Length: 135
Image 1: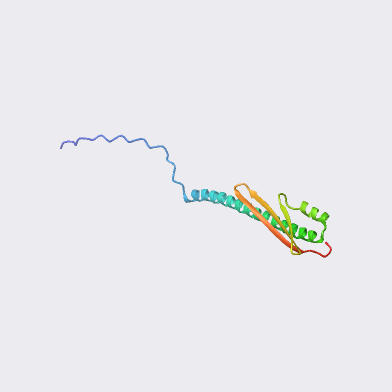
Image 2: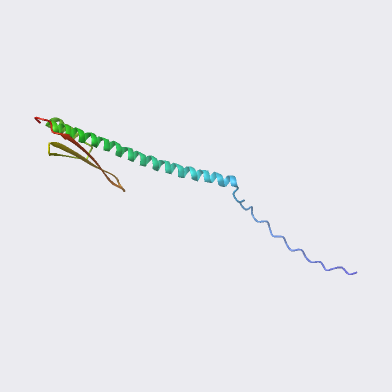
């Protein structure tokens, strides 16, 4: 019997360097929690900013209504000194207009507010008061 010819064995290629394992579910979840927290904080900040802007507008509207009522009252009584003090107490940039017509004093207070790109907002308050006798 003749010996079978031997076939040389192929040289083994060196093992590649350790490859990173795919991220496990726990590692992915940890990254998602960070992202969700960042988005949540951003959303909360924007909501708080919007809410504070609305509260600021409500306070300004209330001040304008108070000024309109007081201005109409003092104009109807003919008290120019107190009327001047009320006009001075109006919100900054407000216009106070008084019109006397048919025995009534009509007061209108207009205030314009703006937050840059969040367009101008015009707040208007009106009040009427009948003229008092002798005023």
